[in-house]
Amino acid sequence: MRPIDVVRRVCPRARPEYLAAFEAGDQLFAQARINTPDRLAQFLAQVCHETGGLTITYESGDYSAQRLMQIFGAGHHSAALTSAECNALAHNGPAIFERVYGLGNKHKHDLGNTQPGDGWKYRGAGLMQTTGRANYARMGRKCGVDFETHPEWVLSAAHALKPAIAEWSEGGLNAWADKGDIEHITRKINGGLNGFDSRKQWFRKIRPLIDKVDLRGSLTPVSAPADPAPVPTPAPTPTLPPLPHVDPADPSPPVETKSPMSNADKARHAGAATSTIGGIWGAINAETIVEAAAIIVAVVLVVAAIYFLKTKRSA
Image 1: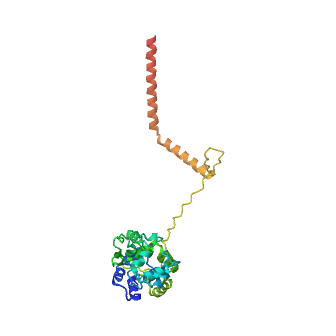
Image 2: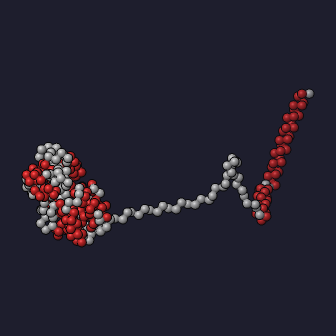
Image 3: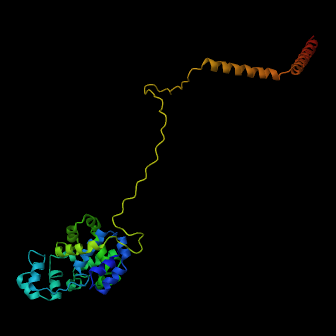
Protein backbone atom coordinates (compact mmCIF):
# COMPACT_ATOMS: atom_id res chain seq x y z
CA MET A 1 0.00 0.00 0.00
CA ARG A 2 1.27 3.47 -0.88
CA PRO A 3 1.37 6.21 1.78
CA ILE A 4 -1.27 8.20 -0.14
CA ASP A 5 -3.59 5.16 -0.02
CA VAL A 6 -3.29 4.98 3.76
CA VAL A 7 -3.84 8.72 4.12
CA ARG A 8 -6.98 8.65 2.02
CA ARG A 9 -8.46 5.91 4.19
CA VAL A 10 -7.72 7.40 7.62
CA CYS A 11 -7.97 11.12 6.81
CA PRO A 12 -11.16 11.63 4.80
CA ARG A 13 -11.10 15.41 5.36
CA ALA A 14 -7.41 15.89 4.47
CA ARG A 15 -6.52 19.20 2.84
CA PRO A 16 -5.86 19.09 -0.92
CA GLU A 17 -2.30 20.42 -0.63
CA TYR A 18 -1.40 17.66 1.84
CA LEU A 19 -2.95 14.98 -0.39
CA ALA A 20 -1.01 16.31 -3.37
CA ALA A 21 2.21 16.20 -1.35
CA PHE A 22 1.63 12.55 -0.45
CA GLU A 23 0.62 11.66 -3.99
CA ALA A 24 3.99 12.92 -5.27
CA GLY A 25 6.04 11.90 -2.24
CA ASP A 26 6.93 8.23 -2.75
CA GLN A 27 10.53 9.00 -3.66
CA LEU A 28 10.96 11.08 -0.51
CA PHE A 29 9.77 8.14 1.57
CA ALA A 30 12.09 5.81 -0.32
CA GLN A 31 15.10 8.08 0.16
CA ALA A 32 14.42 8.29 3.90
CA ARG A 33 13.84 4.52 4.05
CA ILE A 34 10.40 4.96 5.56
CA ASN A 35 9.62 1.78 3.71
CA THR A 36 8.27 -0.77 6.20
CA PRO A 37 4.80 -1.02 7.75
CA ASP A 38 6.05 -0.06 11.23
CA ARG A 39 8.05 2.92 10.01
CA LEU A 40 5.26 4.30 7.84
CA ALA A 41 2.61 3.75 10.54
CA GLN A 42 4.68 5.52 13.20
CA PHE A 43 5.44 8.43 10.87
CA LEU A 44 1.80 8.86 9.88
CA ALA A 45 0.63 8.59 13.49
CA GLN A 46 2.78 11.61 14.40
CA VAL A 47 1.73 13.59 11.32
CA CYS A 48 -1.97 12.82 11.77
CA HIS A 49 -1.88 13.95 15.39
CA GLU A 50 0.03 17.15 14.64
CA THR A 51 -2.36 18.12 11.85
CA GLY A 52 -5.64 16.77 13.21
CA GLY A 53 -5.94 14.19 10.45
CA LEU A 54 -4.28 16.46 7.85
CA THR A 55 -6.78 19.27 8.39
CA ILE A 56 -4.59 21.78 10.27
CA THR A 57 -2.12 24.06 8.54
CA TYR A 58 -0.98 26.57 11.19
CA GLU A 59 -1.12 26.43 14.95
CA SER A 60 -4.21 28.58 15.37
CA GLY A 61 -3.54 30.32 18.66
CA ASP A 62 -7.24 30.26 19.48
CA TYR A 63 -6.56 29.14 23.06
CA SER A 64 -8.84 29.73 26.00
CA ALA A 65 -7.34 31.04 29.22
CA GLN A 66 -7.67 27.58 30.78
CA ARG A 67 -5.90 25.89 27.86
CA LEU A 68 -3.16 28.50 27.87
CA MET A 69 -2.47 27.77 31.51
CA GLN A 70 -2.33 24.02 30.79
CA ILE A 71 0.13 24.38 27.92
CA PHE A 72 2.17 27.51 28.63
CA GLY A 73 1.64 28.09 32.35
CA ALA A 74 4.29 27.94 35.05
CA GLY A 75 5.59 24.40 35.41
CA HIS A 76 4.49 23.46 31.89
CA HIS A 77 6.47 25.75 29.59
CA SER A 78 9.42 28.14 29.68
CA ALA A 79 7.00 31.05 29.09
CA ALA A 80 5.54 30.41 32.57
CA LEU A 81 2.34 32.36 31.92
CA THR A 82 0.48 33.62 34.94
CA SER A 83 -3.26 33.33 35.39
CA ALA A 84 -3.66 37.05 34.70
CA GLU A 85 -1.66 36.79 31.47
CA CYS A 86 -3.74 33.83 30.29
CA ASN A 87 -6.91 35.79 30.78
CA ALA A 88 -5.47 38.77 28.87
CA LEU A 89 -4.07 36.70 25.99
CA ALA A 90 -6.93 34.25 25.47
CA HIS A 91 -7.94 33.80 21.78
CA ASN A 92 -5.38 36.38 20.59
CA GLY A 93 -3.05 34.30 18.45
CA PRO A 94 -0.42 36.91 17.47
CA ALA A 95 -0.12 38.14 21.06
CA ILE A 96 0.05 34.61 22.46
CA PHE A 97 2.82 33.47 20.13
CA GLU A 98 4.84 36.64 20.54
CA ARG A 99 4.71 36.07 24.28
CA VAL A 100 5.48 32.33 24.33
CA TYR A 101 7.61 31.88 21.16
CA GLY A 102 8.90 35.36 20.39
CA LEU A 103 10.65 38.24 22.13
CA GLY A 104 8.20 38.01 25.04
CA ASN A 105 9.83 34.79 26.22
CA LYS A 106 13.41 35.49 27.26
CA HIS A 107 14.05 31.78 27.88
CA LYS A 108 13.04 30.50 24.45
CA HIS A 109 16.33 31.12 22.62
CA ASP A 110 16.33 27.80 20.74
CA LEU A 111 13.57 28.97 18.38
CA GLY A 112 15.74 31.75 16.98
CA ASN A 113 12.93 34.35 16.92
CA THR A 114 14.93 37.55 17.03
CA GLN A 115 12.63 40.11 15.41
CA PRO A 116 9.29 41.54 16.55
CA GLY A 117 6.50 39.43 15.08
CA ASP A 118 8.68 36.31 14.64
CA GLY A 119 6.61 34.42 17.19
CA TRP A 120 3.54 34.65 14.98
CA LYS A 121 5.30 34.51 11.61
CA TYR A 122 7.18 31.35 12.50
CA ARG A 123 4.49 29.67 14.57
CA GLY A 124 3.89 25.95 14.19
CA ALA A 125 2.99 24.99 10.62
CA GLY A 126 2.96 22.01 8.31
CA LEU A 127 2.91 18.26 8.81
CA MET A 128 5.26 18.32 11.80
CA GLN A 129 4.32 21.82 12.92
CA THR A 130 7.75 23.35 12.34
CA THR A 131 8.14 26.21 14.86
CA GLY A 132 10.61 29.11 15.16
CA ARG A 133 12.75 31.06 12.70
CA ALA A 134 15.80 28.93 13.45
CA ASN A 135 13.93 25.69 12.70
CA TYR A 136 12.44 27.05 9.48
CA ALA A 137 15.97 28.02 8.41
CA ARG A 138 17.45 24.67 9.46
CA MET A 139 14.80 22.67 7.63
CA GLY A 140 15.30 24.94 4.62
CA ARG A 141 19.01 24.08 4.54
CA LYS A 142 18.27 20.37 4.81
CA CYS A 143 15.60 20.46 2.10
CA GLY A 144 17.17 23.01 -0.22
CA VAL A 145 14.15 25.30 0.14
CA ASP A 146 14.18 28.83 1.57
CA PHE A 147 11.57 28.30 4.29
CA GLU A 148 12.94 31.18 6.35
CA THR A 149 12.08 33.73 3.67
CA HIS A 150 8.92 31.87 2.63
CA PRO A 151 7.55 30.12 5.74
CA GLU A 152 4.27 29.46 3.90
CA TRP A 153 6.08 26.98 1.66
CA VAL A 154 6.05 24.34 4.42
CA LEU A 155 2.34 24.00 3.54
CA SER A 156 2.72 23.75 -0.23
CA ALA A 157 2.09 20.57 -2.19
CA ALA A 158 5.61 20.80 -3.60
CA HIS A 159 7.39 20.99 -0.23
CA ALA A 160 5.09 19.96 2.65
CA LEU A 161 6.56 16.47 3.07
CA LYS A 162 10.18 17.62 2.95
CA PRO A 163 10.57 19.21 6.41
CA ALA A 164 8.48 16.46 8.04
CA ILE A 165 10.66 13.71 6.60
CA ALA A 166 13.83 15.71 7.30
CA GLU A 167 12.86 16.02 10.97
CA TRP A 168 12.10 12.30 11.12
CA SER A 169 15.44 11.39 9.57
CA GLU A 170 17.34 13.89 11.70
CA GLY A 171 16.05 12.15 14.81
CA GLY A 172 17.05 8.70 13.51
CA LEU A 173 13.45 7.62 14.10
CA ASN A 174 13.39 4.64 11.73
CA ALA A 175 15.35 2.66 14.31
CA TRP A 176 12.86 3.59 17.05
CA ALA A 177 9.94 2.70 14.80
CA ASP A 178 11.52 -0.72 14.26
CA LYS A 179 11.57 -1.12 18.05
CA GLY A 180 7.95 0.04 18.37
CA ASP A 181 8.99 2.83 20.77
CA ILE A 182 6.33 5.44 20.12
CA GLU A 183 7.17 7.24 23.38
CA HIS A 184 10.72 7.99 22.23
CA ILE A 185 9.46 9.07 18.81
CA THR A 186 6.93 11.42 20.42
CA ARG A 187 9.55 13.01 22.65
CA LYS A 188 11.79 13.67 19.63
CA ILE A 189 8.96 15.20 17.60
CA ASN A 190 7.14 17.06 20.35
CA GLY A 191 9.85 17.67 22.91
CA GLY A 192 7.56 16.04 25.46
CA LEU A 193 4.51 13.81 25.54
CA ASN A 194 1.78 16.25 24.57
CA GLY A 195 -1.02 14.37 22.85
CA PHE A 196 0.61 11.02 23.57
CA ASP A 197 -2.69 9.13 23.81
CA SER A 198 -3.84 10.60 20.51
CA ARG A 199 -0.63 9.55 18.79
CA LYS A 200 -1.03 5.99 20.08
CA GLN A 201 -4.64 5.92 18.86
CA TRP A 202 -3.58 7.00 15.40
CA PHE A 203 -0.93 4.29 15.32
CA ARG A 204 -3.42 1.60 16.35
CA LYS A 205 -5.75 2.82 13.61
CA ILE A 206 -3.12 2.97 10.88
CA ARG A 207 -0.86 -0.03 11.47
CA PRO A 208 -3.38 -2.81 10.68
CA LEU A 209 -4.03 -1.25 7.27
CA ILE A 210 -0.44 -1.67 6.08
CA ASP A 211 0.71 -5.08 4.97
CA LYS A 212 3.46 -3.89 2.65
CA VAL A 213 4.76 -0.46 1.71
CA ASP A 214 4.61 0.13 -2.01
CA LEU A 215 6.60 3.15 -3.18
CA ARG A 216 6.42 4.06 -6.85
CA GLY A 217 9.87 4.03 -8.37
CA SER A 218 11.26 1.53 -5.85
CA LEU A 219 11.99 -2.00 -7.02
CA THR A 220 9.80 -4.02 -4.66
CA PRO A 221 7.33 -3.43 -1.83
CA VAL A 222 8.99 -3.79 1.57
CA SER A 223 7.39 -5.57 4.50
CA ALA A 224 10.39 -5.67 6.83
CA PRO A 225 13.84 -4.06 7.06
CA ALA A 226 16.15 -5.41 4.41
CA ASP A 227 18.59 -8.04 5.61
CA PRO A 228 22.24 -7.06 5.37
CA ALA A 229 24.07 -8.33 2.31
CA PRO A 230 25.88 -11.64 2.94
CA VAL A 231 29.60 -11.39 3.47
CA PRO A 232 31.46 -13.45 0.83
CA THR A 233 33.48 -16.37 2.22
CA PRO A 234 37.17 -15.98 1.34
CA ALA A 235 38.77 -18.74 -0.73
CA PRO A 236 40.82 -21.22 1.35
CA THR A 237 44.53 -20.46 1.56
CA PRO A 238 46.70 -23.16 -0.09
CA THR A 239 48.62 -25.27 2.42
CA LEU A 240 52.38 -25.16 1.82
CA PRO A 241 54.82 -27.86 2.98
CA PRO A 242 56.60 -27.03 6.24
CA LEU A 243 59.93 -25.26 5.96
CA PRO A 244 63.02 -27.12 7.22
CA HIS A 245 63.95 -26.39 10.79
CA VAL A 246 66.86 -24.01 11.20
CA ASP A 247 68.78 -23.87 14.42
CA PRO A 248 69.15 -20.15 15.39
CA ALA A 249 72.64 -20.92 16.72
CA ASP A 250 73.78 -22.33 13.35
CA PRO A 251 73.81 -19.65 10.61
CA SER A 252 74.65 -22.15 7.83
CA PRO A 253 71.78 -22.93 5.45
CA PRO A 254 70.10 -26.31 5.77
CA VAL A 255 71.56 -29.09 3.59
CA GLU A 256 69.14 -30.92 1.40
CA THR A 257 69.31 -34.64 2.04
CA LYS A 258 68.63 -37.37 -0.51
CA SER A 259 67.34 -40.82 0.10
CA PRO A 260 69.97 -43.63 -0.41
CA MET A 261 70.05 -45.28 -3.89
CA SER A 262 68.98 -48.90 -4.13
CA ASN A 263 71.19 -51.60 -5.76
CA ALA A 264 68.82 -51.83 -8.70
CA ASP A 265 69.11 -48.08 -9.27
CA LYS A 266 72.93 -48.35 -9.13
CA ALA A 267 72.90 -51.10 -11.75
CA ARG A 268 70.66 -49.06 -14.04
CA HIS A 269 72.98 -46.02 -13.76
CA ALA A 270 76.10 -48.14 -14.47
CA GLY A 271 74.45 -49.71 -17.50
CA ALA A 272 73.53 -46.31 -18.85
CA ALA A 273 77.14 -45.09 -18.47
CA THR A 274 78.55 -48.11 -20.26
CA SER A 275 76.12 -47.69 -23.12
CA THR A 276 77.15 -44.07 -23.50
CA ILE A 277 80.90 -44.90 -23.70
CA GLY A 278 80.22 -47.73 -26.15
CA GLY A 279 78.29 -45.39 -28.36
CA ILE A 280 81.23 -42.97 -28.48
CA TRP A 281 83.75 -45.64 -29.47
CA GLY A 282 81.34 -46.98 -32.05
CA ALA A 283 81.36 -43.61 -33.75
CA ILE A 284 85.20 -43.76 -34.19
CA ASN A 285 85.79 -46.18 -37.16
CA ALA A 286 89.08 -47.52 -38.65
CA GLU A 287 89.22 -44.95 -41.43
CA THR A 288 89.22 -42.15 -38.90
CA ILE A 289 92.11 -43.78 -36.99
CA VAL A 290 94.29 -44.09 -40.17
CA GLU A 291 93.73 -40.46 -41.10
CA ALA A 292 94.71 -39.32 -37.64
CA ALA A 293 97.91 -41.44 -37.72
CA ALA A 294 98.96 -40.01 -41.12
CA ILE A 295 98.59 -36.48 -39.82
CA ILE A 296 100.72 -37.29 -36.79
CA VAL A 297 103.51 -38.81 -38.96
CA ALA A 298 103.53 -35.78 -41.24
CA VAL A 299 103.84 -33.43 -38.29
CA VAL A 300 106.76 -35.47 -36.89
CA LEU A 301 108.61 -35.42 -40.24
CA VAL A 302 108.22 -31.66 -40.57
CA VAL A 303 109.55 -31.08 -37.07
CA ALA A 304 112.52 -33.43 -37.73
CA ALA A 305 113.38 -31.65 -40.98
CA ILE A 306 113.38 -28.25 -39.30
CA TYR A 307 115.60 -29.56 -36.52
CA PHE A 308 118.04 -31.08 -39.08
CA LEU A 309 118.37 -27.83 -41.01
CA LYS A 310 119.04 -25.78 -37.87
CA THR A 311 121.77 -28.26 -36.77
CA LYS A 312 123.52 -28.18 -40.19
CA ARG A 313 123.73 -24.37 -40.23
CA SER A 314 125.18 -24.27 -36.75
CA ALA A 315 128.00 -26.62 -37.87
